[in-house]
Length: 551
Image 1 (tube, rainbow, N blue to C red):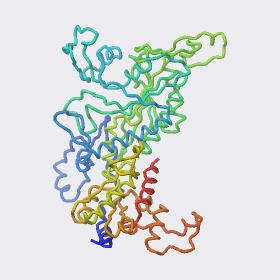
Image 2: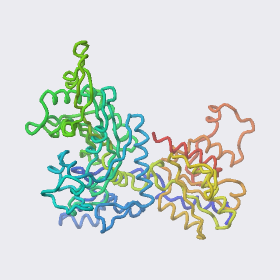
Image 3: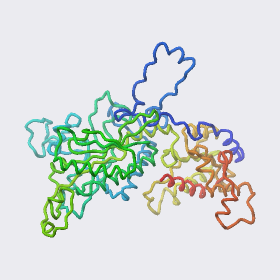
Image 4: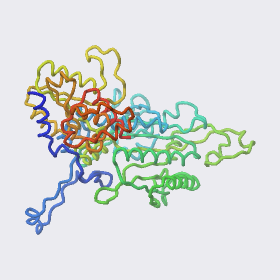
């Protein structure tokens, strides 16, 4: 098949299903923290059924479980209920989310740590989890341990527990050395897997699971640093939610319970005052939930609004006075009594005295469960992903399976992915940054079938190469699967110049000034972007720009 035929096929098979999705269905539907897309369908009253069947066809709510099967993201197994098995495309999406957060950690002062999955029962007793959370934990028995909970000897033969959260491990790291007030704040981040023994009947896809990962973070700070740390965390939330397309959302302050709280009233008043100042400084809308704070400290809840206008709680930023005391955490500071109240002094006599102070612990998870956020994003985008999140970014389809064409396609793949060396004997290690995902379809099928499959799977970019393309060092590229492709792709200067050059109407008196060149070169139309001749190097450069432009 000649390249002209490839051009014609790309024009004829750029179907609407591959165009940008402008009417996303039911984004962020969740009640009580869980996705309502997984709830049973509401029964239709008998008197409405006939009219519904003939005059009204409701749009079904997107279900991430079905979409995940179509997009080959994850599966589940009866051998490990509530523990998703991520397929290669799902693993790509998972890593894109976590790598995005990791890239922000340096700017927000977090250092990533890795902590154990199981701890002895005695640790969970110290943290209070064994007393208050044991029913939701998995007990683990090892060599020499019978699994009995009563009368166990504290030692190597005692019972273990799978961790449901990371905070006790982070407390162990903080307590591993002496700390000074100059060291604080200390911010730890952790993506270690967590396990919670959820009721079997409540398990649902990625929204309610037994094994999951949090973008977990814990900040150990001085009482005087609470306001600044909360403000920085709110900035982190705002940045992340804007980038992922989550929102709109508001903030809610939950204050001291009437009964059953620990710590002094003065500590609570100071903490709540710091949270209020941070909320005011954020410039965002917020409300107060009187008496709804946790027993160990006040908190800020992030409340998302769904497409129906309903509000649901997602992330939480919590102050904790209890866990640092249980683990006897401390740092050395001058004027310890004043320091513990979050105040400062210039009195030399008070500053001469240095002593231990208990730090304040701030729990924060910007997105919460990575699995649950994946479920919400799967339903929100319904397969029409932003380019940087798309697990299917580029597909290169060959017109035939001849050796020259296949070799050229493989070379294009390496160029776009940033791999200049042969895969069999690399001279240098691959850089650790996120590269463009490029797949090949060199099967001996008709090109129409290859393009049809690629559009059904919603690849953002589809490139076709044939014999004439290999000789001309070009690819025939369809950008219509790119979100808002006429806006995002059609104005890219390098692609516009490439289009002008391919039409052989480029002016011989080309201006060296980029502004003049931009004004003279027209934006690309939808027709142009269905079958645009582009060299692999120019395509690689453009896609790298699109990859980094999401921030």
